[in-house]
Image 1 (cartoon, rainbow, N blue to C red):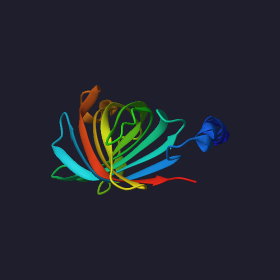
Image 2: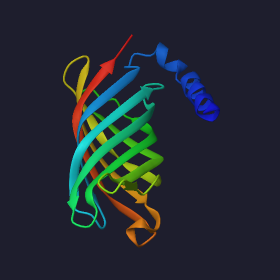
Image 3: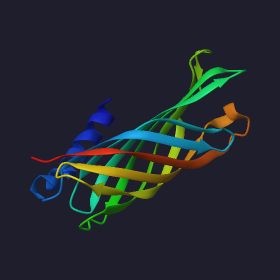
Length: 176
C-alpha cells in the first residue's frame, strides 16, 4: 500500500507542470469498447480513459475496460476486466488531436458463475487514435489499440492472447 501511495505522489509531482498550460489538465473519456482476442469471439463492453496532461503533447493515460464475454457452456458467464496505465503522446492540431499510446497493466478473465478467475494477467497496450474536439470542453474519441494478455495456463496455452481493441466515446475536458 505504501508503494502505491508513493507512486501516486510521484505522478502528482510530475503532473505539476500541467497547472501552467493552455491545454486541459484532465480529460475523462467514457464510451464503448469492442475487443477481439485470439481464442475468444469479439465482444463489447464499457471503456474509459483518464488522462492527466503533463504538457501539450505528453500525458499519463489510464485505460479501464470491462467486457462481457457472454455465457460459455462449460464456464458460464465470462467477463474481462483490464486496467492499463500508459504514456500518451498527442499532436494538437486545430481540428483533430491524433495520439499514440503504449503501456503495461493488468487484466483478469473472470467466471462469476464458477467463482473463479485467471487472477491478474500481465497486459500490454499499444496503438493510437484521435480526439475530435466539438466544443470547448468536449471531444469525440476514436481509439484503436493492440492489447495482449498473458492468462497463464488457464487458457491451456500459457502464451499471450492478443487482439485489436476498438473504443469510442465522449471526452470531457476539465480545465481550471
